[in-house]
Amino acid sequence: MRGIVVTPGQLDRVNAPSMASDRAATMEKLWRSSPQLAAALPIRWPEMRIRLVHQISLLLLGTVALAVLAMGGLVAWNLRAGFSEYLRAQDAQFLDRLMVVAENDLRRRGGLPAGDLRPVLREWMDEVAPPAQRRPPRADAPPEDDGRPGRPPRRDGPPGRPPPEARPPRDPANLGPRLLLLSADGEQVLAGRPEAVTLPGQNRALKLAGQELALLRLAERAGPAEGVDASFLRRQYLGIGGVALALMLLALVAARLLAGRWIRPLQKAQAAARRMAQGDFGEHIDTRRDDELGALMQDMNAMATSLKTLEASRRRWIAELSHELRTPLAVLRGELEALSDGVRPLNAHAVASLQEEVKRLTRLTEDFHTLACSDLRALPCRFALLQPGPLLLDAAARVRERARAAGLSLDLDLPQDLPPVRWDIDRIAQLLGNLLENSLRYTDAPGRIRLSARLQGGQLLITVDDSAPGVPAEALPQLFDPLYRVEGSRSRAGGGSGLGLAIAQALAHSHGGRLHAEPSPLGGLRLSLWLPLDAEAAPK
Image (cartoon, rainbow, N blue to C red; front, top):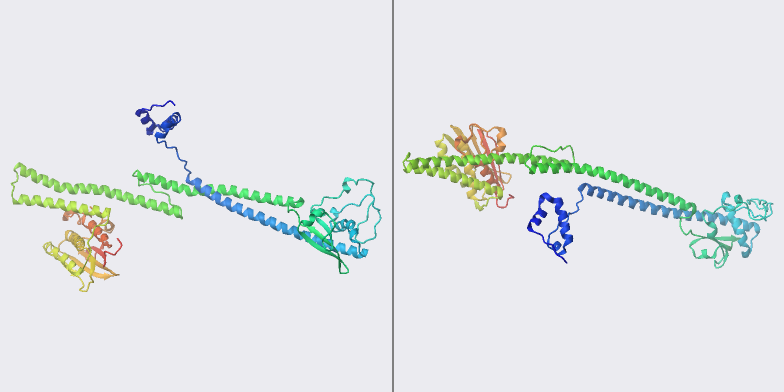
């Protein structure tokens, strides 16, 4: 077999995304020309994908078709079974009437020998049958009446074959071949077709003066589909089939409409998700539905709003982060240039200034690292059993001198009987320090700061209140966003980086607690911290 040589350039052209249509044709030619190459090249044939609207349509159509077929089959079976019972009841009524006519005739005749019963069997059937189904008189029969009451008079007719209008009508119930006259013991066939003896049927005894002379037997029909009965059943089956077909066509149309009604909102949601993936969070989906799809679209709109807020926060955070880092770096650069140019002498004061800027940079990087860790995972904690009272007193003692120097009074409202807790002492100390530091930085002198604690609902509620200035109500939900500062008096003029409350909230979450901001009765801001007594066992 002659081989085929493919250069790397040809393979690159085959795999080029911009030549998708040529790629399939080229790969097929290569595959057909060389089986060895076809085995070596990873050919991916396109997969058949059924759209969701088609899947829903087929599911609904299949369900309706199964229900219609099951119902149609049940109705057809019930119709056939009921019609068979109806035919058996008809046979029983005919046999009862025939028995009465036969017994009356035998009683008038005074009885007949068993061998003479065959000729009169047809006469009995003619008397029982409807007038339209009675046999015409024979051509050689006498025209006069035989004198028996209830018997039709015989008519004269031309010799030979009767005219077409006088021929015996068709037996729709097929009674003739099924009717038998048996001996009293049922062993001998006196009239009728012997092969019908083996068929199941109904019997009636012919009696005269209490003595059984013979048995009338009517064999069951071979099936309900005979003659007029067959036409009746056929019409019923055709009607059932027509209704089933109409229902399936209606189900197909309804399934297509219903599937479209379900799919259109999903297509809108898909288009919205694609726009969100491209960074467009402004356009919302119409949510005029009150079902699960409407709830999905509402969630999509809420997600778009949340992503828009997060994107704005991310951009603001990046801008604020670069600004926060640029400030101490600019100071360091200026200090170093002054020292390098000899403008400022290298003494202890210059070194202390450099160290202060380095500490500020260190605090910023540590705060950013803490926030990054809290976003990626829960902050690692080392829980231990401790008393919360001394922890709160120690946190207040660390800021008391600075508060007094700033013209602020620090009040404590701590019960003596606080229960022991299981917390990370370092993390909670950092959290309390951030809360008190926030009040210390943004409270005007003369002012007040109050630290209180109490048990509430199985948790310890720690509250930090400060006096004016307060925080606008619309700014309260954003206080825990990183790098967020309230415009006005509670701004970066106090020297904060805007990360303290964000870190405090992350520390509270690491203990299964929560932090909430609201206006304070003292005129400023109230920060309420709920912490479980056993933070190690609390859900995070």
